[in-house]
Amino acid sequence: MSEFDANPFADPVDINPFQDPSVTQLTNANQQGIDDFNPFTENSRLTPPISDTKVPAGQKTTPSQPAILPTTVEPSPQATATAAQLALLRQQEELERKAAELDRKEQELKNESYTSKRNNWPPFPSFCPIKPCFYQDFAAEIPSGFQRTVKMLYYLWMFHAVTLFLNLLACLAEFIVDSKHGVDFGLAILWFLLFTPCAFLCWYRPIYKAFRSDSSFNFFFFFFVFFCQIVLYIIQAVGIPNWGVSGWIAALSWTKTNLAVAVVMMVVAVFFTVCAVLSLMLVQRVHSIFRSTGASFQRAQEEFSHGVFSNTTVRSAAATAASAAAQNTFQGN
Figure (cartoon, rainbow, N blue to C red):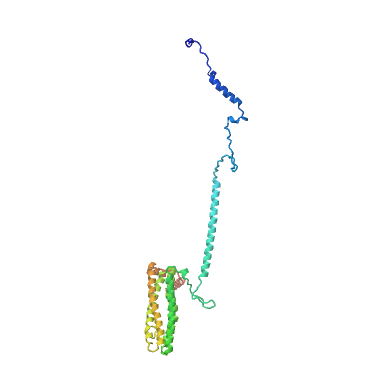
């Protein structure tokens, strides 16, 4: 009944919560730990115990270093402009150096072309007073796809020259056997001296220049002259008497008189026939190439007019004629 003996109307008793035995016990224990703490002697209470681990003898221990954060420094506008200017100067120097190198190489190429493109045909020896008149180099001037055709035309011209020389010898044999054929021998000499250089200049050089520079005008000039050359080969192969050629008719006429002369003239007639056949084959081949290159008669006219008006000699002659005509007109008035 003690619980009911307390007077509820009496003054309340002061109760200290820290006077509780459980709180007092904990407080005293913590206080004792703080009082006994010595940071220089008792590190084991605050820091975890160091484990008794051993480092292997072969492994090196690297001391730990603090992390260093990279620092970014923004350049100033003046420094940026200076760097850009220096870069431009370096680029300009590089361009000037390359330009000088290109100029030097161009000058070397010009010198090489001047020295290497000296006339080399006909290939006269150095001690000969007559010097070469033309420059000819198939590998350097003719495209690779047309070199074989141009070489075949060159060989045809050489075969043409050999045939004319054999014709001269056949007419000489004819003249030795019978002096009445002196006209044939004289004409054979003329044909050899005339047709050999004319064939080179009138149809071989134009076709060489046509393939070299893709010239429509030279193509048309070659076709015109070469057609006349084919007709001439046919006439020479036929062998009209007293024309200075050893064709089939002239050779057969000697079979009953002198067989040796007839055989020599027949060989020449075979050569003329081969020339005619090869010419027909080559002109057909050149014509097919001409059609594939896109050349035309209009283009040939343009090349001719451009070549005529760009020629200084023609222009000076035309100016002189025009001035003379104007002076005559004024004097007449």
